[in-house]
Length: 323
Ligand code: UT7
Image 1: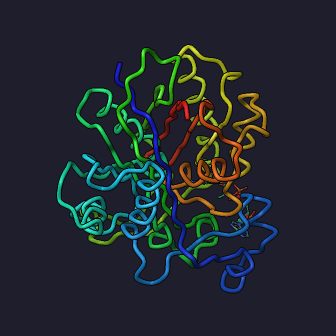
Image 2: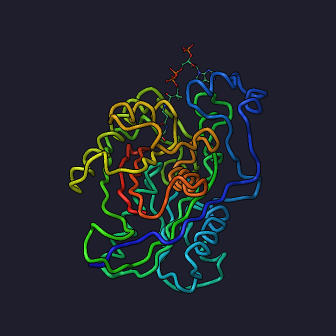
């Protein structure tokens, strides 16, 4: 059978680091409040003129190098983003432009903070059905551009960054052996659009708008939905929690991650955390956390990874990956 295998990983963060103390200079907040309520210590913020497509491009270059491929080998580029370069064309188009090539299928996926699991599933499905041999799946965000910097309830929570994976077709006898995306579970509840959304949109009011969030409600849904998406996917794949080597949840709030761990009875020591360094980078948060675990040597080839996220929509989902 043909399976989709992740063969390269690359991330990119803007150079500019903004600490909680930096934010407290202009907002009625404190390092103590932000750390205790979210676990966030700092975030990277894109410089003026530094855009989603640029962050995504740099992450993609690194992922290609890691996979020992070039852009010429890639037949599909999928970009997960909530903060597109422009309203049209796709952010993928601008990333392809930076590579200076014009071949292949290129499109964006909009699933907010769940963008990476949505993108991964889309890429895996195209590979498994023979439509793609080598896909570049990029998650890139400049959430700082849709942040109301006067609103302390949201401004302290987000950051900018990008992560990319190269996914390749691979022949395996079954799901039991070899690196591959084992399965995914995706959901969205459109009845909950209003608890996390921008107050603008191209069609709605001809602006891109800024984020508005009912934090407590989102928190509650995040814990429930991330935990349930892990349980449902394990059941779907006939696997148990004991078979998971590393849990890589969306990095929105350390308290959400802790609450999910408790609900699932999953050990904290096998959970990758990067929200302290990156804050919530929306679609980019899972690949950024994955890279932390790979770079420090915790995640090794052959390990089984559970990725899970929840974001605006509300959208949520999970992916099981053998690394
Ligand atoms: O990727 C998915 C998207 N987002 C999320 O998953 C985020 C989900 N929600 C959360 O992470 C949490 O709800 C927050 C971190 C946003 C807030 O934590 P909370 O424990 O739910 O706090 P709260 O909203 O109940 O606010 C408590 C107090 C309020 O003051 P009063 O009304 O009790 O006097 C807020 O005004 O904290 C105040 N507050 C702040 N104080 C200092 C809100 N933001 C700040 C701030 N600094 N930045």
